[in-house]
Amino acid sequence: MEEITKNTSVQSKSIWKPLIYAVVLAIGIVGGYFLKNPSLHFINTGNEKLDQVVRLINRAYVDTVDEKKLTEAAIVEMLQNLDPHSTYIPAAELQASNEQLEGNFEGIGVEFNLLNDTIFISSVISGGPSEKVGIMPGDRIIKVENKTVAGIGITNEDVIKSLKGEKGTDVTVYIKRPGEKNLLKFTITRDRIPIYSVEAAFMAGNGIGYIKLSRFAKETYNELVSAMDKLKKEGMTSLVLDLRGNPGGYLDAATKITSEFLGKGKLMVYTEGRSQTKREYKTSDEGSFTSGKLVILVDESSASASEIVSGAVQDWDRGVIVGRRSYGKGLVQESFILKDRSAIRLTIARYYTPTGRSIQKPYDQGYDEYETEIDHRFSSGELDNPDSIKKNEKLAYKTPSGRKVYGGGGIYPDVFVPLDSALHNQLATTVFRNGFISRLAYNYVDRHRKRLKKLGSLETFSKQFSFEGELKAGLEKLLADSKITYTGDEFKGALPLFASQTKALIARQVYGKNAYYQVLNETDNTFEMALESLKDYEAILKGESSLAWYNK
Image (cartoon, rainbow, N blue to C red; front, top):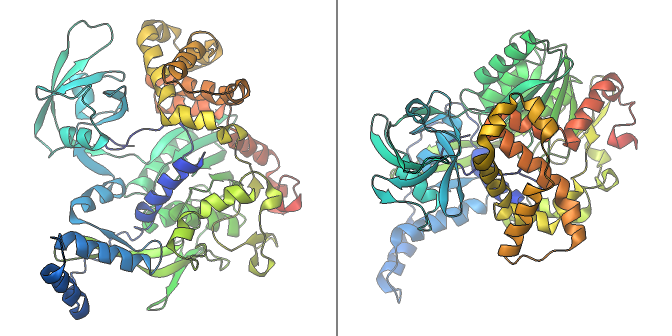
């Protein structure tokens, strides 16, 4: 993650509708930018009829208009009438939209949350400029360059503008640190900050490695290989690769990663379009992890590159896919740079899995229907019950072992895991939207930092942690102070979620990112099903396991 992204308190970005819609918007941009070296085509946007209309409006319209905004609005509307993933990116936003995929940006190297109208440092990027001068997780930024930034209604965009800047430039911040009476002054020299795709990598059991991958960027493949090498040295023989909430990225990263799991000469994906001849992507070498058990976790926010990897692994009977049907983003975009340095990312082809399944879900009902398609999955029950999953036998394909896999949009899991019922809870939605769990975690660490450090290991912390008492009372006070009403059943139903998220955020501040996911996995139904799938691995791959949703 990176400095410019507001952290979330929830492991999966798809746990309820408002958060899913935010991810859907991101998928349209991040998930569509697949080509490793996008063509920089400079094109002339002149169009006689369009230009005539703009001139007419400028000359005769009743009010003054902004010609630039008018033209951009026309471009956006025009692209939306093509497909949901052809997009226009203004020049001012192009650099920021590319940073996630390029794998770095220039800034001070922190992750932050805005809580109580204050900038809280949630984590400090290892080796970055902030770590070098002594910034710590839990610090609050009160002033930037003698300008107060706390208690003034600051936004995420304002924070970004204040802290980001060119490499080599300085920024002075004034920090409030728990236990210190006076503000601490730090002058930080901005630098190029890496954006890591591997969020966590650790041993999750006897021989079982776990890797959380958040995007497919320029350095993702190298990061993943390094993480796998580390885990193999620690005894990994089986791998759980978590692609939940991963919106995709570069095709190059997806194919390189897929090749690590397949043998030489295997088709991974192919593309085809009206003006694009069929192009196949095959593995050139034997992968480094072709025989160990492999489970990939996906959900309704796993898109594009995530679907290429999981689709190829499934089609070759190489691994087990666990979770819920993926997003269904299988359109290929190429970037075209306009004269003003803005860009159009235009769909030029479609992606197909090795068996011939189109990854792209239908969009013939229009843009608005497409954007709310995830909502239909909620209302139809698809996210709760495997019996509600629509199997189109006309789009059934056979893997080498004779197992059926289904097309129709997205990658259907081999083993279905319903959405946690606690995530349907309206109180839970309200609590996370208001950042109450983050506040609880930050304040708790402030009060107990010395005691937490004395605990030593994460294992000891995990055994001694209790949400009951201080933390539960603190949440109830936050709800009362905000005049939020709820029933006893609502609170009881969401309590396990509140406890696990608070525990994970506290662990992250004290023990780091791995600890965050280690704690979440303790109560994660999808991860638990991944472990069960490893036990029944061969039967699932043969289509004979009772765990497979299509056998129920």
